[in-house]
Image 1 (cartoon, one colour):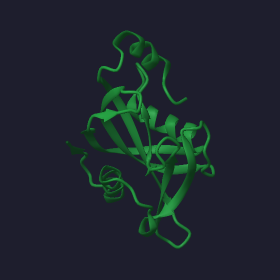
Image 2 (cartoon, rainbow, N blue to C red):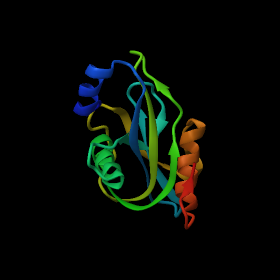
Image 3 (tube, one colour):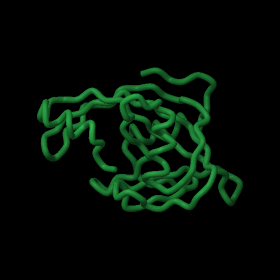
Length: 159
């Protein structure tokens, strides 16, 4: 589902005013065929960028549940959350229609449990696992999300 119903209802009341939202990013990792690790990425249908799976936390939903739900909805894969690796705030995002948002982003390291990646809900045009040493071009923020998930340090990074 591209835009949750609660966001549509909010937009009817506040227009394009910046919304402060909770988000969850799932960096899904699995063992690779050659012995290394692979990372699940999706190519966003709206801008063509490769990214880890991410989505908006629904009201009352725990962010780690959002991560698992979004992986299934966007990439058709079952994942298990291992741990929080980064709690951060995104830059302000302005969409083509003028809507503004900013997210507190919960970035989770997840492990692959089952499924073959494929676009499911229309938010992604492609979904695939990539060897860690052959990742496609990504924004600095997405590279950092993947780097922190792969580092798997004992404490989550704040900020």
